[in-house]
Each structure stands twice: as C-alpha cells, then as structure tokens.
Length: 244
Image (cartoon, rainbow, N blue to C red; front, top):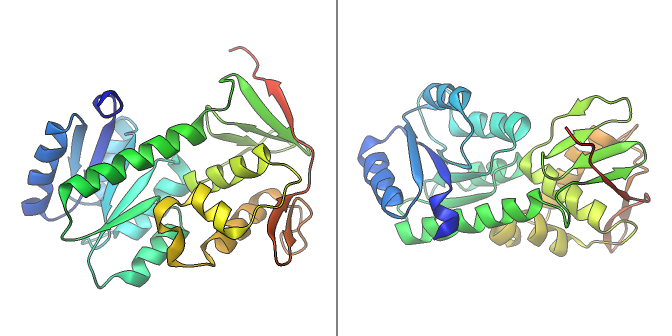
C-alpha cells in the first residue's frame, strides 16, 4: 500500500453519518483524510494545501458539488471522484464532462471506493510524468510540462487546463499525427466510465480546442478524422525543462 500511505484525500460531504465512518475507513486503509461538510469548508481546506484527490458529494446545501468540481477541474487540476445518488444520472454525466475523473453511486461498498481511488491516483500519476521527468512537449509554439501539468501558450501566458483536458492533451502529444479513435481516447482519459456516453470525448475535445486553437470553429491543431476519431496535426518536440 505504499501508494496509499502517501496519498491525501479531501472528503466533502454534508452527511456526517456517512462522512465520518468513511473517513475512518479510509484512514485505516493508509490514506490521510481531511473532511469538509460543504463547499465553503472545502475551499478553505484547499487554501491550506492541495490534496492528492477529492471525494465530492454532488448534492450539498449552498454551493453544490458540480460547481466545486468545475472549480477544481479548471483551476486546480486535482483528481475528483463524485459521490452520487442513484437518481443523479444526468448530474454524473455533467460532472464527468466538466472534469470529474470517476464516480461512485451511494450506497457503495467501501472497498470498491478504495479501488476507484487507487485507480484514479495511478492514472493521474501516469499522466503526470513523462518518460523523462525533466521533459517538455513543444508543438506550434505551445509548451506542455507533464510534471507540473502546466500549459504555456505561444505568448508565454499560462493556460489553465482541467485534469481531463491535461490527460487528453497528453494523449495527443504522445501520439502526434496519429488518428486516435473515440474508444481509445475515452479509455485513456476517462477510465471505466468511458462506456457511459459516446460524446464525452467530443465535449472534452471541444473544450480543449477553445483553449489552444486560434479559431475553435475551424480547428487546425486537433483535427477531426471522419469515421476515425481525432488527430493532433502538429509536430511535437521533446525538450529538456530549464533548471530552476
């Protein structure tokens, strides 16, 4: 469990009767657990330091889980697992589309949740490191730093990307000028929930295009290959990161 011992979880759920026993269970599994009863408490905890993963209930008073999920995805890039009720299917789809990495339906088996946590953490770790940790990917003036999950525009501005957008872009820069079909992209980016909806990858590609294309309505970098999928139509260079 060496991976779990090092991992910190922020558990956000307004239902203390579920939250406290779950926190105790996760602690026994070797995770460090910080609790928050609502989005405001979660945001306060995030100011004190970034966890490795967030477990986030969708239905909460005040700011709901989807709003907080969007914030985490767009500004933090922290992996997120949604805790949802059976009747919240559309909310789960929305959550995955705005950047959640996985979901677990209540009531759930704690061992399944732990398996999901470890799977997401492994996927995040794999996406967060390149073959050489000091390597950067450069294409058409853009620079992607896998270790810091940092995307820099040609004008040197930092462009925030969600964890899902990051993994999607990593898939493209690691396979430039190769056609990647939707099934492969969904498996690389979304994991086990890929089978739920075919258009999830289309939505993520559209979001990524809005950030890196000069004109997202007429994309030239991430091209659609009809009947095939998508392709990064650019040469990619791997360069060493400058020393701090």
